[in-house]
Amino acid sequence: MQNDKASKENPYVCKQILDQVGKPSGFHTCKAINIRDDKYRVNIYVREDVPDLTVDKTYISNSYVCQLEDDKVTILDYSNRNKKVDVS
Image 1 (cartoon, rainbow, N blue to C red):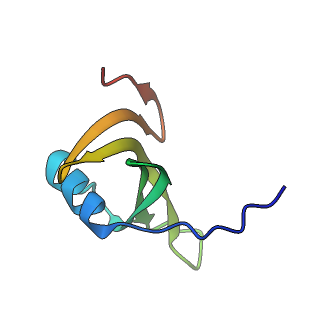
Image 2 (cartoon, rainbow, N blue to C red):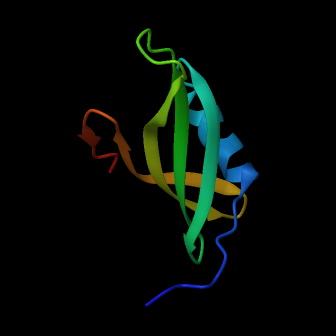
C-alpha cells in the first residue's frame, strides 16, 4: 500500500541536532523528516571526494531519531555508518 501523504522537513530540528553533535567532516546537508507526532528521523549527509570517481560520493553518515517537545530536541536513538550506538 502506498502512502500518499507528503513528508514534511523541519530545518529547526536539523539546526538543534547539529548544535548538539556538531557538523561532521565533509558535511553536505541535513534532513529532518517527521515520522509521527513529535518524532523525527534526522539524516546527516556528507560528501567525500573519491579519486577514482568523476563525481563526489554523498552518503548518510549519521542518523538520529529525535523528539521535538516544547522547542527542545532530544535524541532518542542514534546510528552512524559504521556502528550502532545506544544513547539511553
